[in-house]
Image (cartoon, rainbow, N blue to C red; front, side, top):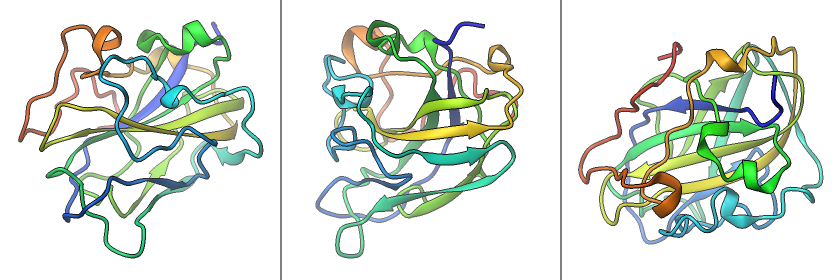
Length: 203
């Protein structure tokens, strides 16, 4: 199986609250340069991971298949605002190291291992699915906002996965939108949470 396959864990998550700055993940610890609070460039030029150097990532977070993992966000000094009316999130990992292949959304796979209606802006738990494979990977959180400009947000972290069955072909491909040539003409609609075309069996 090609090492270019990427896993993505997808969840349509409702966000609540309102504030003055965007937000980003803080757990797992993001790769330096990969977790700006701003959205990806509308042209898609910094997809994935805001163009961060994924070959220089430092320490990794261990994730075992079937384990419950916690995603936390940097909320600044308390409440986070600028959640743009809510939206839909995806979680993802990649085993790819080739820069050209990393930029191809077709190389990503996704699933939905979390519960519905969690507050993505605060914290939520997700389960590592059995279809992943063992080894070092890049984990990513992506979000499509409901209110405001049509955008796509993305933060990335380094992880090491164990206990996988290496059945990534059974997972659907990552959904992308609002990022120019990467997503083509696909754009999300304002005031509507994304209904992912192929969310996978974990919904």
